Length: 252
Image (cartoon, rainbow, N blue to C red):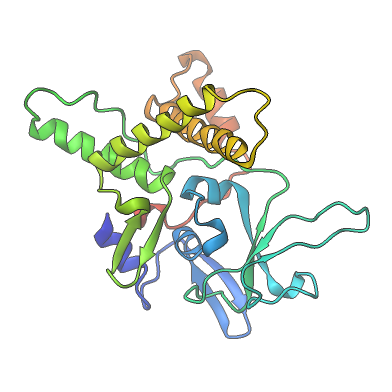
């Protein structure tokens, strides 16, 4: 997977199926994971799945007049009704659209649909002797869901993707991520309901995020099992009004 990401993040690599953006320098194709890899410091805790669901790419030409891509990252403006507008965040300077587009949080969140075949199923607990079959399934499972649900960034110095806290990749890293997340959830359950300190709010916030990511992984790995009699109806409804997320095939 790192080899594929390294090829896609190179300066001349263009992924097939990338969305085309019109700029003053012409048309620039940018796949989805390039947006994520260069999302900037303010969104560094967001995973790829969340970035696809919560962030839209907007031309700076249509941004508020006070917004510039060199303002350090975040911009907020108050609307006429005194309601804060959606947060705006610039890409980092390595993004090909850095001068022309910015990231804006969506008012209505999307639900990303995982394509290119069914997601990997849970390989189960490690057997006493890890067979080649189990290792292959575990590697594919961890590779898929770490890329999707664990925040990562592109390390230009090391020429590879890097996870937070130097997390190993993939199976051991997924286990460490799950264990650290459940420790946060357990800590949140022991908090006093009247604890409104910044530390308490942060703990509850991180626990909710981890539970949401685990729920996505469980639903996807179980293939969302449903009644066969309703499969046809579900498939027709599922494909209505979808917008393809680019770059996932080369990333995964």
